[in-house]
Image (cartoon, rainbow, N blue to C red; front, side, top):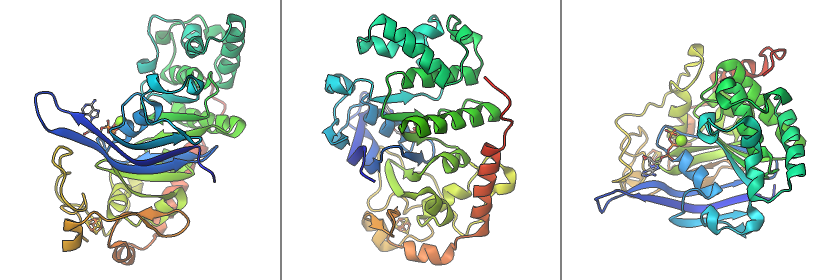
Length: 348
Ligand SMILES: Nc1ncnc2c1ncn2[C@@H]1O[C@H](COP(=O)(O)OP(=O)(O)OP(=O)(O)O)[C@@H](O)[C@H]1O
Ligand code: SF4
Ligand SMILES: [Mg+2]
């Protein structure tokens, strides 16, 4: 698949006020997203998911590395990107309240991105109605304020607002975390329908591994500002090869108590500080497979085939200890059950 978005060796450091130290938030992230593809981005809190998303949409300035969108270099903040790129990469936030002005009627919130594009008023009106219909909102809601809508409806407005510019890529930063399970399932189905109809590419950032398993074609696992493993979702979920991915998939992030996965890989100790990163592999102080080599050197990317890429010197030993298990298959089925069989008769 030719890539729509290509991120190469991305770094982001945030200065710390009153200190010479910096937060090393992103430490060499490379990823790509093809047309009509969803890449899921997972990892613990603070691993750098949002920062990657914000660099891609141009809200955070890149420290080092390159971002290309359809071959065009976009490694600069939004304001310095060519006007021809306006509206083609959009962002949906976790909290609809973050993107919706409480004093602005729904009509105006959805229409706003078209003002920057100087779309004439008659066309704006038409496109607002089209966007409302696409996300399943009734016209009668146009003159309401965000507080008059449910959380699920507010997030539909957030999606309509992002989609109204007909973007080719949308960064979705935890778009369903603030929603109840029914609204979450409805939003996921809506996003998948939009992608099927319009071929939009998604970077889908989430803690919720069931949702990621369900919606993503490929998945990337982040730890301390690095992607430690990425590949087709089915491969990474069924046969994770990085000790951190195994620990993440086994951990409490799973939404279903029955699905606490059994794993021979347990991590010990605390996550190192992003202000003072260790030499060598960032997981070495916590990893049961660590060797002198991993304490001294950063493991390079290794392609296991089919685009399944892992950064671990000892992934063969990990594979021997951690065989693909039925439990992972059960996890996949459970994800499909949770997200696929909700009551489709309920509407926004
Ligand atoms: N504006 C900022 N100034 C300083 N440090 C920042 C800033 N934004 C993010 N960071 C730091 O960068 C690191 C990555 O943060 P980021 O928000 O990208 O993580 P995340 O994976 O999205 O976390 P979460 O799952 O909690 O949303 C963290 O250590 C965070 O404290
Ligand atoms: S390189 Fe070494 S420390 Fe890092 S994840 Fe692999 S085994 Fe663990
Ligand atoms: Mg975040």
